[in-house]
Length: 458
Image (cartoon, rainbow, N blue to C red; front, side, top):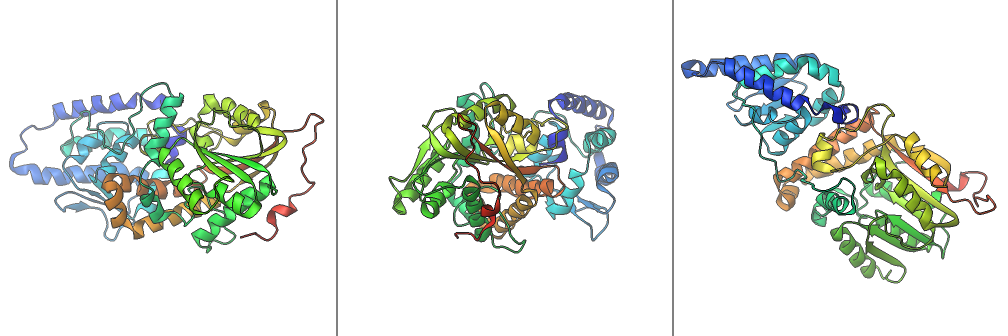
């Protein structure tokens, strides 16, 4: 979600203990009996915290304590409200981003409005944070924070086992996707497409933009009536259903989420597509047969760097000679490492790993696939995420009623923060079209892309 997600990496694991050590020293040197001066000291500590964060967030924000006292301008660009005396301790209990995520998800912190706050956070480098962190720790201790391990919120993933093993991958997928479909239906489009939409205009309705995305995927694959298609990571089935209804293909979708597989199969039967479309509960490593076309939309992010070759081999193995595949996934700039202590990794997409497009292209080519086209849809995903966030906010009470306040707050922070990441080019998303050449080297591809952008079938 933040710049730290792609720059900090695993090598920053040490500062958690550094934070605790600093905090313990501050506690030892603080006045243990606060007595009648406690209120005045609390306000002084709040001023120190505000001053410590101003070098990285700017001066035009306000800090509000649990008792209503505040520091900073009014009106302000954004307001950070510390709702409980427990919050300073939570913020000292883990690496900064994970600790913040826990405090926000539990409702110990509120930030309004989120967008300008997230804009400030996205611009903070690890070096900037480390420069001000000792002052932040001192201020949090002065506010009553004590370094201790915190209770892990129910919304935080707790995975065990070997990373990217079949068993752990299944648990990671279910953590995210096995929430009630009614929750997703509140803020997704009518087709339940949970991936980047395709906007011809920023003013397009989300339903229109998602139909356009489904169609451009089918057009890039140049699907023809009677062909077969495999969708790796088929979600709630929107692509396989669209391909069957509008292009006459026979489609199979696979997912690791039992909830998604059951939902999709019910929908297939309701639409009278049984026999032409099928949803299977399966891993991408499980052979499904040979197909004319393969799609993978929003799934490659779950594979992991060490399994990228395995994924590419699976795509190649599922294609007949001359077959086409379109892989649609989030990417990042080629510098830095993925931060496994990030909010996204702990609460949203556990074990997700986002790589740069160059690494992904090389993996596809090593599997014998020929890369024919790469297109960035970065601005489209920013628009999509902001649409999702707006729709979630409009139906907030319903969302909380379905999944509870913690999960709802996870999705609010995720959609707003990730939209900011795409807008600032810390994240990208690419559609990569590949073919499996025939034995004679033929690709079966036309000379131009003109047919992709002909009038939509929808």
